[in-house]
Length: 559
Image (cartoon, rainbow, N blue to C red; front, side):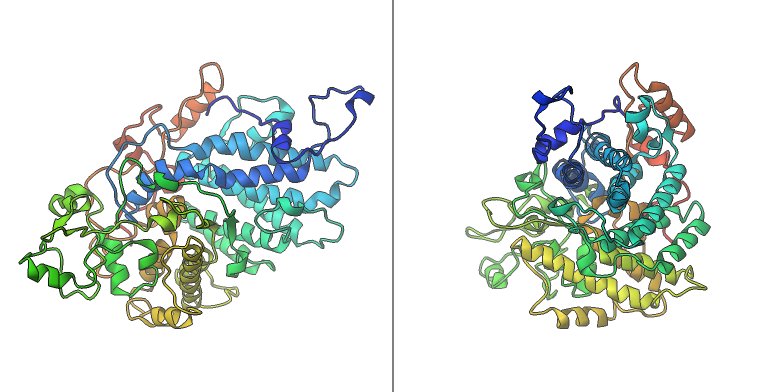
């Protein structure tokens, strides 16, 4: 971490409103100091920054690294550049400082109790980004760092990941308790709450789902904590996210974080593992996630006309021949991999793509010359919540309390929500959708498909794979999922992971702070975690794991 930077309150206020309108000529105060911060403006700034930095993250991390490592897509391999880990900088520079200032300022007011729910929401927003940050970095400053403005401590300790998880579980529980109290006379954020419009119940539900995110990360370290947190969430009167309407959604009509950079350095393609599985289940998300190749319409007549034969990996009898993927690691099948960037000469002027791209407009609604597509970004979803619950019920963690449904019940809810949410994203992007009409028939047909519905044999794997498919737009959660579970599995009879040769980094290398700042604490944290300081090589990052990941299976070795 570079020297911890506290974003000035005046900067945030200037960006969002001219809220402080004192006549400084009539006071004996420094006009450059904001003495009465606009709480709503500070909150809006932090909330906006949860999303606004993600263009860089999408290009340098999700599309080029994390979603390739998870085999949701494939592309040319590149090194982990210095452009990764923007999440870390944004947390400390753009998100946490204002949230902490809101807490400190409002707590000191004579009517500070009226800001109780506001303070609770600040913890939820901060933890959402902080959890994402430790997911790739491990130990990091938090308990001391967030007090730096008051204590003057600019060399905060790096909290180990277990302490971070425990701290956040406590903070989330306290936030839920606050939000559960009567909201009479509570001050809201007004229009600055761009996510839930001051719906405190939905904020509480988000907090409970974040507790589930932490619970599943805890499983391989201490399963009893996982079970305890699961019980807390399911017996909470507020509960976790329980509907599509309660999802944590960013909706800004003109926001265009990726644009034409979706092809930066290399185009992205579907892997054969994900495409073949989605074909085998008639998944409505297939045309949402990927684009077809050029084997459509009367292509067979053209082949006959010019006496052309397609490569051996193309099965002309496949009714879904237009959907083709390739190797996730191109070195495992270099012959097929050549077709990612090579067109097939079908005779005459016909040059056909045999392997389609990812659906670029689904990720980047303003891709190319598009000017009206709208990005919807669901950062925490109902489907994710349902699959966590289904997973834990299936594992037997719900004994002794009401789980409000069986593993199959929650699985079905998760599948339906995923299908409908992805369809909404596609529709807003003016991209290809997968559901027709109200979608009811398509959803039911998918749930009834023999390869989708519970069969009493591999139910947990089915929950895992649907959870995996739902993380297609959440690179961090997708990569965390494959690390913690080891799914998709190698040689599975249900969903087979593609072969892979190269080492996969399981974390980021956290840069050393500038000399003379927080070097000693950084070095101690690196050594305590068993990391080689400043070693950015893939093999080191693959073998020296984070605390939550130490007991996780190898990629593809789930059980």
